Picture 1 (spheres, helix red, strand yellow):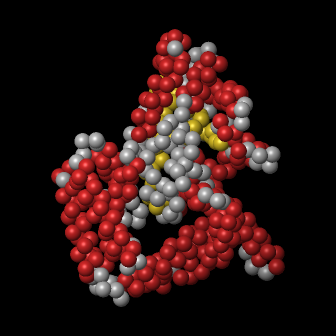
Picture 2 (cartoon, helix red, strand yellow):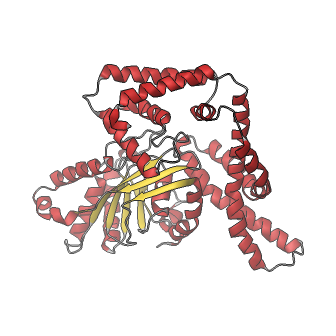
Length: 444
């Protein structure tokens, strides 16, 4: 493993685990080396490679868009095991440049390493649970590698699905699902006879396998309906509207099943239009009084409006939250401001904030602790400061975030307690019954 990749794999694992507090890997590979091309969906820009590398064993080389490679960034990208992929908009020589990159990929595969290709090529600005058309590059790379190796070693291809409840929200959910591998050597005869056809057919096969690893809304006009139904039923991947008693795996399967059910052309269009309108009207009612579905559900389930759990948490964790404010809150304010001013597309914010936040918080505290150690007689060994750095800061940083989130929730619930929400709760109960009737026995 190259140095930056190794450091990222070691030091980003914990921040990623904090960011996605509920995680599940389905059929994840166990081998570090496997000569496998992983073809993943691209739901969340820079976050996708971070989680695939951070939460799984294989050592992976990444394929990413060429415009990221500048004179300044090239050494870093090399050390992070990243290779450029050229698009048509990158210039006339894109195909020739890609051929050269594909040969490098073949060499990487020949020594047992793995590649990951984000087959869709781009990320939606607004998060949508769907699979965009998959490009042929991954399969082409696999066969180029086999030709370079004279078909003497086996090369595999595998579909990957990155499933987020909400990729931009900290403390949300993540499920990564892997298909069974396909051995490209099995298609040697067909490839030698008609390479273009085999590449096209296998790309379509990978696309189907990728669809099976995610919730795939084939009808984009029904994607909002898919989200709204999950919010009301609280059984799917909607964040933060879910039942904590239901496992993440079951909620992912519910989300998949619902998307497939809505994709069915045989579905009654009049019923679809009616329930879609019902849920849109309900959302409009929520917006009218400026309240979220999460808060209304809380009030429905807690008519007395008790906030004792929040009070207890805020009191007990206040000292740790104060430490977290010093060690993480102060440097993070700069990271947040810098990222949101610099990055034009919000889809990049969460991953950049995470990556830049880890570096900034680490540097800030190294400097802070060094100053304290050299200016104040602490009477302790430097090893205690190192232990403090990893244990105390590692604990208080997420506590700071949770404490601030709980404080915000406490205030919002106080406002909700002062509102007359009886009619809106009745509307929600009716909507819940309408959704249950629309879905039928299959989703009970």
